[in-house]
Image (cartoon, rainbow over all chains, first blue to last red; front, side, top):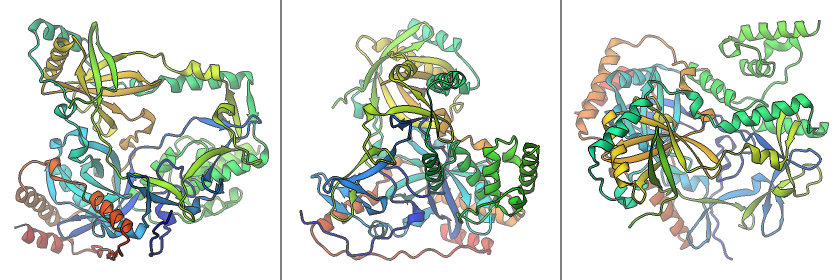
Length: 356
Length: 261
């Protein structure tokens, strides 16, 4: 099968994380942010970074081999029938007839050069005019660049006027319609579905609604009133399976049932794989919140290599991020609120207590 | 052309029941990419392997475990796993009726349209009318394909929609975040910014109509793909990043205001 290849060099922007998608697991470092660019507000450009406003769900169940070793995901070339590395994999657009056509990052970016780094706010609407059924994904925007002034100005004005900004931009090879909103001084973005994606009742083929008998409406009115509440009970939103799983696991641990321990080589490997993927042992979610927090404070300095800290004497030389990681491992209470110095202090006193 | 219902269920509102059919309200039109081996263009699939022996371990031969410490797992057998699954049911249970906005639309994940099931038209219409009149949204829970879902029940123009919410543990409670701080904003800057927002809102009057927007990028990608398949040479437009705004914010705002008319 003759295949046309792109003449241009395929840009491997590892930091961009654009390769890891499409049902594949993220390898290498998890992207610290999705997108960097600017919001254009008239002639003013507000540099921003975009983060997802949802934590990724970590699967609670791992697949284990019969000897208790956690299994690893591997990629297989179907023609050569052998394992290949993630770096040997590219994304190809699949046409309707199954014929693959490779598109390089440059080619994809070339068809939307202006928009790929720019959110151009062209229209302001009342924030409550937006139909939430159009909301697709929620993001948080943090100030990029050196100054937070433009960001704060935009956030303040939009919140005060009760406006949302409508724009289009390109994120990860897809064009998105986006609404920018401001709440409590923080800019949020919601990608919106294009009109063609949302089906109406007519599209689905529903009949015209009718006039219901009054006594039936009254009956439902009573039932609704009987269930009225002013606030949502967040417990209701949680999958009961999570609690069931936790209870089961706790019971088994208490009885020492069915506990397996991966061999030490495996544990080390699992740990470094997790670190490379940017996941902590306890989950990625706190990581993300901390990263967003830092970004909101305007702290610069992205993903420098983690310095291997030593013992307590070296704590002061660690970055706040590294200190926080240690605090999390030790489950120190109140760590999210601590300054760098406070973290150093807390970690030092914890290690002192331990060595007694 | 009637769409096919993905599920038939019953809304349970206190002692009242309404038979409904559930329809997907979203058509996914994103461009699909597949993973391919760079060298030969072959398809790529996944396998789960023992990290040391490299042997494939099929799903049915693998155990499932929960990590309880570094490299330590509690293994669960099939019976235990089955015991975790929720009871299958066709009930969509309404737990509460809340003021609008109590279920934050940022939690919305997937909208569905509900239509009446046979002989349930009157009950459907009655519920829709009562719900719309109340101005509230229902908090609903249901189990579909062994998975628990929570969602918002909304009524509009005589019709019911159910919007599935993201899993609770995924939602980032944005109250955990602090707004960026900095030097005080000058009143002149604020005023200008307000004027600009006002000018932009006015200049493009009329409500936001999502129908006006197309996925142009998708069209262009498809055109690019076609061009490549035909063997045409493609000229790539170079991307020029825009210069960042330093200060001189006020000047820029003023210039924008002049442009906006």
